[in-house]
Length: 512
Ligand SMILES: NC(=O)C1=CN([C@@H]2O[C@H](COP(=O)(O)OP(=O)(O)OC[C@H]3O[C@@H](n4cnc5c(N)ncnc54)[C@H](OP(=O)(O)O)[C@@H]3O)[C@@H](O)[C@H]2O)[C@@H](O)CC1
Ligand SMILES: Nc1ncnc2c1ncn2[C@@H]1O[C@H](COP(=O)(O)OP(=O)(O)O)[C@@H](O)[C@H]1O
Ligand SMILES: [K+]
Figure 1: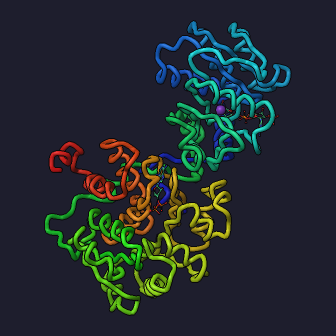
Figure 2 (figure 1 turned 45 degrees about the vertical axis):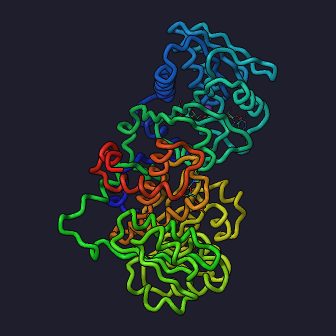
Figure 3 (figure 1 turned 90 degrees about the horizontal axis):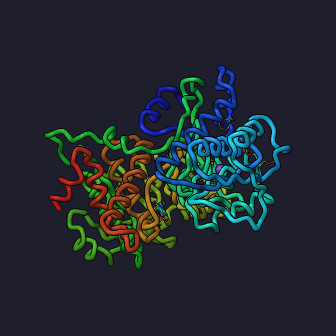
């Protein structure tokens, strides 16, 4: 990644790091003259502030301290809280004489502050109004073992709110996978560099709110590490979608063609076409099986609907479009195969989704191009990589990057904490919600991507922006009506508001 392009993305999203990169930042900070123990005190002070901000008026808590520096943070926090008069139950996973370095020094500090230490045992009852999880941080290696596992299970069984220190114990800081068992946090306060593993995979369901505290390290370590990823930020929208010129006409804002809806599979392609139209493509065409034409026209007369019995009837349609969206409701039979073949032959940017991806994994293998966006969910990603879905989910960032290397272009790996992998690196979407676990949501995304490409956005910007807008639209729709029963068709009107950033939500509500 060039420094210029990296800087460009950096302006719109917090950098995310792997554990080894955060350790490197620690190392540089220490080399710049800030002692490791001073850094631990900063971390503990930040955690203590975070705790008080989230739970003002709290009088008591328990803190579970592991044997490393994550535990060290917990000891120092306990000392700080005790100094302010709180009752703290300090639980040790390892005896004092097994602790070394800063962690040992931190334990002594807590003892000197009068905070009693209780050794962990399986019958222990966690006391207080909440639990601080300082068991395992970025030093976690492999599946959680022994007493740490029991302690994590006890935290989760306690029913108490949990503040996780740096990362919920048991969650992998690089991948967001659970290594056997992981703490279910209410809030996670994370230090020095925000971690990729707090934002994808199992993480969004485990971390609660993420409170990032840089601890002043950026200045001291003169950060020039290329981050592992960036967190997608809503600021991207206005940066890429300024108001249209007053004299814009539909020819300036692109023509998207959606290819899908094989016999018996009508709805998905229509959802994609509708989202595409709502996101501002100048013209939207839909090529679908003849049986779906009437329903499509009734639902969305703005879309130009073409009934085709097979790819032979596409009749130059693909050449008249600026971008093709292929896959929603495509099926894997002869209709879908022919249509995909035609799309692959068109020299146009493509959005490839659903059964088009399954066909790339089976019949149309070995394809690679730079001008396409592939949007697999973990099952499709697994087929494209020849892995199991479990293997994909075990390391989503690696899977997204491997897909991008193998297939070229830009790859969106969907699911909570969607990832976008492209030539500029990896981006992670922190938005979206479980209401999106309903049929057709992916079709809406492919339509959104088609609209942004039709309007001339570069491939990777369109992919990042589309994923962001899709998730934010779902969040907006949920604020209006709740998660259960959220429909893919509900997203388009919210997404429309989002891609007109000069229009406030209140104005928009007034026009509905
Ligand atoms: N100056 C700094 O660096 C700063 C660091 N900071 C803080 O330090 C944290 C990193 O600390 P770290 O590197 O000491 O590792 P850490 O997360 O405590 O884990 C090591 C412990 O876990 C254990 N353990 C490991 N794997 C396990 C498993 N599978 N199952 C069970 N146990 C396992 C391992 O046991 P062992 O393998 O030694 O038996 C050892 O006891 C970081 O997240 C941040 O909070 C901040 O204070 C800012 C300054
Ligand atoms: N729990 C969740 N949190 C965030 N996003 C989600 C969640 N569940 C689903 N999504 C999003 O919803 C979309 C579902 O797409 P997909 O699985 O292709 O559905 P379909 O095939 O029904 O269209 C993806 O963009 C995915 O990231
Ligand atoms: K932790």
